[in-house]
Image (cartoon, rainbow, N blue to C red):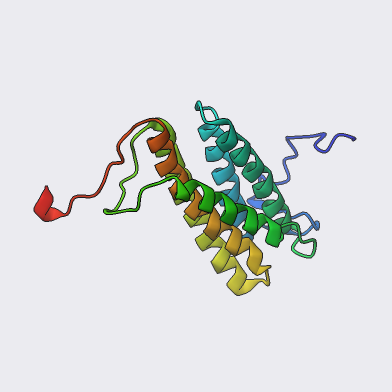
Amino acid sequence: MGHRLSRIVTRTGDAGSTGLADGRRVPKHDARIRTLGEVDELNSHLGLLLTETLPERVHALLTAIQNDLFDLGGELALPEHPQVGETHVLRLDEAISELNAELPPLKEFVLPGGTRAAALAHVCRTVCRRAERSLVRLAERDPLSPLLGQYLNRLSDLLFVLARHLNRAAGQAEPTWRGPAGR
């Protein structure tokens, strides 16, 4: 394979625009660029979570998700070249079911926290929700595959379940919300 990025500094964005994969230039505040940036930010947060000591199956799952997010970004950059399919969403559904089956039922609202890994999973979840909101807004303007939104929606659910799983695996009690009467 040849070099994909031969130059990092191009200076083409110095005036506030950036190039899309099809060659068009758009403002850096464009909805598509915002959504791409939020998916990239999510991927970076997942990379930070991956620096933690994690069960091997969780590490493998998160690594696969990072690759999926790169595919999702590719489809955002070139919507006429679909890269995220139903199998991507189904893989997340299966992971949610497997991890959730090992957890006790929720009796209270869970607060972000517990172990560092669980707290990082919650950060990933909130960034994922923001990326999903940006994608929904972009889809109001530009036609996109509904699978992109389904993937991000499912991923945020998975990250919530994963945070619970990581706390349980570490023997850490989940922090739970106590209403005003319980404080």
